[in-house]
Image (cartoon, rainbow, N blue to C red; front, side):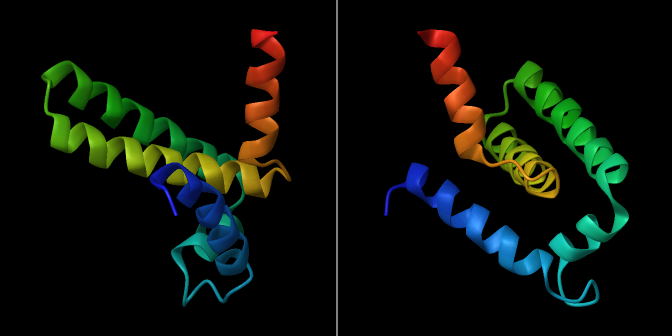
Length: 95
């Protein structure tokens, strides 16, 4: 499995973990708190990603970008959307 293909796998993991008990799963905790909280986390991770990009720290940028993508995937999942939906929109815009 390529690194890019893992994003689809991560969507499946997020779906599974969102059904777990919040005491057992950070993903379930996020889902329980709802879209406003998850959106706030996406915003926080975006700011942290920007800071690391401006500082030129590739290792920290990679870590913060991973956090951003994870929280975005949780937000999409909680909104009944997928990375495939986002990809389809990007493809539509490119056409």
